[in-house]
Length: 62
Image (cartoon, helix red, strand yellow):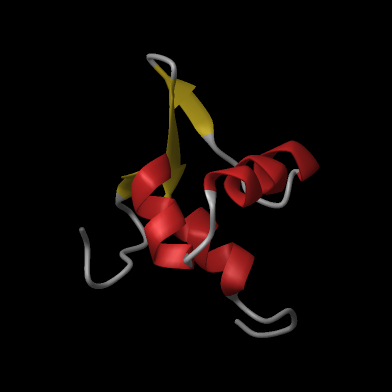
């Protein structure tokens, strides 16, 4: 389990859920709404660290 989120690292669904402290159903809802972009690789979701940061970063901040 990573302790610090890194921009250019690819995370699994489980790692992302743990980092964001969300359930699997919330994770799936975020993907379906387009709030979190994920790619399926071999039937499993992969999420770029930059995408996780974009989700939690307040709007208007760089």
